[in-house]
Image 1 (spheres, rainbow, N blue to C red):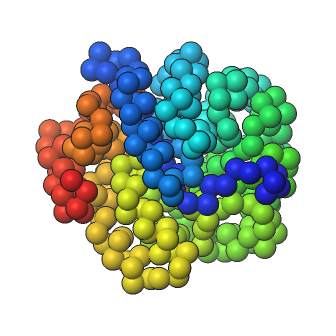
Image 2 (cartoon, helix red, strand yellow):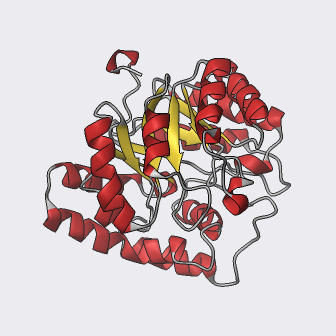
Image 3 (cartoon, rainbow, N blue to C red):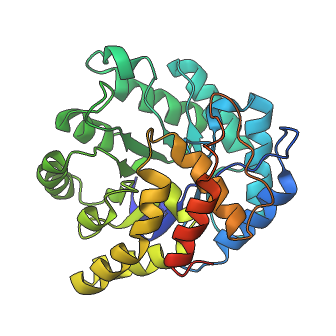
Length: 308
């Protein structure tokens, strides 16, 4: 994808949660006001829905379409990017086409989830991106999964996907700093037009000096300091970046240093309730409510970080 295609994510790209009413259905009123708040920051370059933070796999196809439509209406000129999470390649392509029809400006393509356990056949990820782009016409973001899964793409696979039509950015969450430090420079050299976005919510300081921006669930809770952190990284201002990291550390620990990274979504919702952004922290199974005291812990952390 060339720069003339116009989708510029060089800044903060939050991945907001999907609000639910206490009775379990999507709360479109809360989703609209939440979207408008995030899109109101000039430094927010896009919003990603229906991913891990957005509980996309817990929604029906009709609900996913409705979430995109609500966010598109509420976001103004801020592009809405749809997480494409279906297992089969053809089903994922159909999901992406539905997202495009609903107004999504791009797609974030998740690996087939069977690969997490069993790995992928050579060429299968490339075929997935090709099929999704051809079916939907959407610009696509390459999603690099953590190194401790079998769905983490080797460098050659990343380079080949990044060279395919429609692929314009990468969301890298490899969570192995040795691989980060050796692979990101090669991606930069070999694919200079590729926009590189970190999704290391819990490793932002290390990764912030090598990227064009951040595509993080964290951005849906604390956009203000993350906007400043991205600016400090681009300015190579380590002291400021370190101070922002340390300011956020209580929140990082309360949200992301939990037993499972999936608990981060529940914690994000509790934090958004504490900030007065969302009215309710309901999640859908397989996510479960956090233990008693988690809400107070997260509120205290937000207070320490001057986010209340």
